[in-house]
Image 1 (cartoon, rainbow over the protein chains, first blue to last red):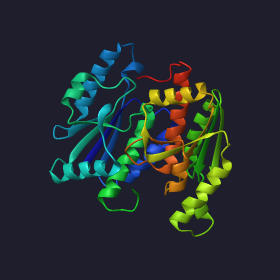
Image 2 (cartoon, helix red, strand yellow; image 1 turned 45 degrees about the vertical axis):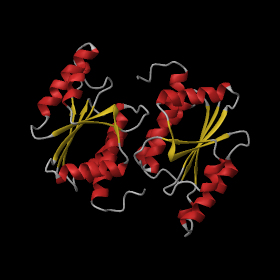
Image 3 (tube, rainbow over the protein chains, first blue to last red; image 1 turned 180 degrees about the vertical axis):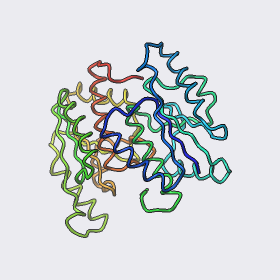
Image 4 (cartoon, chains in turn brown, blue; image 1 turned 135 degrees about the horizontal axis):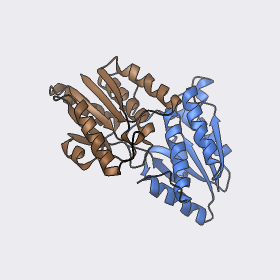
Amino acid sequence: MKVTLLVIGKTDDKLLKELIDKYHKKLKHYARFSYTEIPDPSRRKSLSIDDQKEQEAQKIESLIDKQSKLILLDENGRTFSSRSFASFIEKEGLQGNSNLTFVIAGPYGFSDSLKAKAHLLISLSKMTFTHQMVRLIFSEQLYRAFSIIKGEPYHHD
Amino acid sequence: MKVTLLVIGKTDDKLLKELIDKYHKKLKHYARFSYTEIPDPSRRKSLSIDDQKEQEAQKIESLIDKQSKLILLDENGRTFSSRSFASFIEKEGLQGNSNLTFVIAGPYGFSDSLKAKAHLLISLSKMTFTHQMVRLIFSEQLYRAFSIIKGEPYHHD
């Protein structure tokens, strides 16, 4: 299974980056996992929020495999338990759609046009987390999902 | 306002511990905040899970101020948005109940007896997070709640 995680902007905090890297290393035991930090356009020039989101959308689309399903982390998305998220990933694999691209937005979220193109929107919580911390939380959930699929003792209900 | 966060067991990961400490320092600008890691009984001797939860409950109860409200982080608790969580804290302050103790369980959760004594159970997400990572996520939410109450620009909807 091919799993790609795209995020907007660098992970500024070195400690957070190290924690995230740990889960990415573990993920590579389970899937062809790749992780890309897309440069944040706001760092380069002054743009309106809508223009920034549109630029990010174009960049995201240019990076996605044609055969990959696009899944966006969005506060209004569907909520999953860790087990149901694992089931979702397992089913996608069984259906032969074994190429999933997850994207974590920058601080302003996704453009409507990108949301319309997505296969699914996922929400981690009703609470708002920092978009940087979401990287850690979601990376751990991806690792957890694969450990559930493989029947390993990492997850407790 | 007095806010106490009790957790079961040490934070094993040094990186996580440093990140958590950052939010605790920021929290101290807003509230009389204190944080205590209660030694994990399972580290001392072999106990059944129920006995361990009962021992933890007794220790937690012994550490709580009589005038403090007890709020447990529990997967079956009430979910809040960050704004509604801030409103909850603000209301408790206005009602003169300005002493809140939040507790994050160890890996096995809380005893039923402790849950019955709690003022409120809070769930961060339908997903299961590591009990160590919950410390970081919840500490950031506490900081976010106070920044919302103070009208500071940290939180974006």
